[in-house]
Image 1 (cartoon, rainbow, N blue to C red):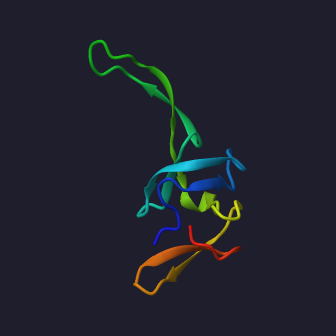
Image 2: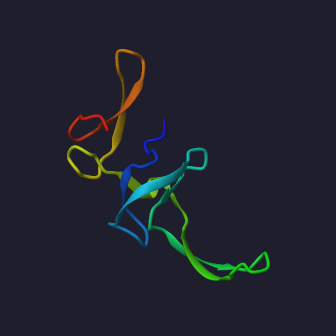
Length: 103
């Protein structure tokens, strides 16, 4: 089970965006990457492919390594490590290590 999911709030713990918070847009569990809104911005030079299409230099989000971000607990609003707990009906729930609340 990946400790990050889409729409989780995360904080970057290392790199050029260190200390910034953002929301997860997309995850790639097999590659261990996440895309965070307005973080990890790269500059891409785009060539127009069709007639009438605009080219130029565009800013867009890129993937960050999942080890570089930490989820923020919704209950205690701190960056935390995540545990997984089985509940009685057999489903797995992510648990905050600091306050033991599910998020």
